[in-house]
Amino acid sequence: MFNRHFPHWPADLPKQLTLPRASLYANLQASAARHPAHTAIHYYGRDLSYAALDQAVCALAGWLQQHAGVRHGDRVLLYLPNCPQYVIGYYAILRADAVVVPVNPMNRSAELAHYVENAQSHVILSAEDLWPQIAPLMHQANGLQHCVLAAYSDYIHTQTDLPLPDVVRASRASTAPNGAVLWSSALALGCLPQPHQAGVDDLAVMPYTSGTTGKPKGCMHTHGSVQATATGAGLWRAVTPQTVVFGVLPMFHVTGMQAGMNTPIQYGATSVVMTRWDRDCAAQLIQRQRISSFTAITTMMVDFLSHPHLEQFDLSSLKFLGGGGAAMPEALAQKLHDVLGLDFVEGYGLSETMAPTHVNPPQRPKKQCGGIPFFNTDARVFNHDTARECGPNEVGEIIVRGPQVFRGYWNDPKATAAAFMSWDGAMFFRTGDLGYYDAEGYFFITDRLKRMINASGFKVWPAEVEAMLYGHPDIQEACVIATRDAYRGESVTAVVVMKPEARQRCTEDQLIAWARTTMAAYKVPRVVRFVEALPRTGTGKVFWRQLQEEEDARMAQRDST
Image (cartoon, rainbow, N blue to C red):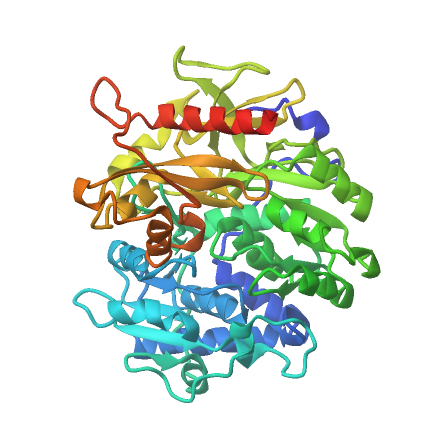
């Protein structure tokens, strides 16, 4: 067990946790029983109490069982941005003993189809504005048969002066489109769910992640693996019922799911939820709701600090500032400290580990550092070339084991087997990230083994984008690489060979416009470069690394001029 970091462990916390032996829904049930009138969710001026949240969860769970035929272990798609209905839907699926399949609401119909087919799901919970993406997939054989559509405005204060996105302010539809049911109508039936049966070892959540194969893979998480980081995060951040958490990170992603929803619910805290990031609205909500815990990504913090009138807001309620996804630049971390008086506490984790495997000690964080191994977590650095464990400051692949590690990839035993390795008498998960630990046991990420682009905290897998680009009738070959971006961290560049007959008729802008209709916005190439041929390795494979190195050299030359 790696323990070099123990001297820097928070003095008031145990190094090992005894985790709850109950389902995630039991956390909501307990908080609603202890604090029924306490605010669980604040949404653009309106409060939703724990009692009201649990009541809505049970009504929707009953509808899922009685009207959609959801049974123990079924996978249900949750295709929503942050909103009260996301939380209700998530816990209703759990209350119905089913498995949550969170889907990025930026995904288009062609992307959504993979989740439907791979997860073998026949039910989807979504929103009215996303119906155009869902409609083509309804009532197909072995596909979606039931859809519940939410209206965000059902949960806002209609007289609020906060700057609301148009989609949030929009009124609820008077009738549901053919093949769907309005969320409000499903709840109004007041269906009673069957007795809750799911336990700690049952599957609870299946977030999808991609990789070198190009198709997203479902990460099988149990109630226990989700409890592991939700419970630990609450202690690490000293969350209590008086804590007010800012739920701005997307809840379909594991960091936002835990920091903005599961942890506050377990500890009976309040989550202030925003559907879309808006720095002016964020500053107003921090001031009005006395938000104390703010988890964000670098691009959010850059935008927030760029607010021209930030000094006019009272931000003194903030007590914790942290995040992950990409290293926080030192200059930005210093500016955050100068403006807010807080250190930015960075962490490191993956979809396969339900957020943190590492996090910085709040009392002694290091900049641009993944942190120290989390509760009950053993982390090592391994050199595959020499088949040995690395010492301090030696770079290798970071491997981890702990209660938060997933069970494997859904219906993909080959990928599951490749994701684990035996070492020191135990099975470790291979993160695919290269890094090292220093003499004090703090881990630093230096590179990645897998091809991956980090665009504003969103992981973009080149193989997945390439697979979608091949859907364009004029593309002969495509290779996707990363381009450094001062604001987004990295952005997507597509190097493309067009079919001979199309080389004069398709422009870069036309190809980008086509991509916007096909894939989520963060995956869309910002730059397209047409070439006569792609470089290849000796075995005939596209030599993507050469293109990446050429792009890195191009950016370095640009920065030096």
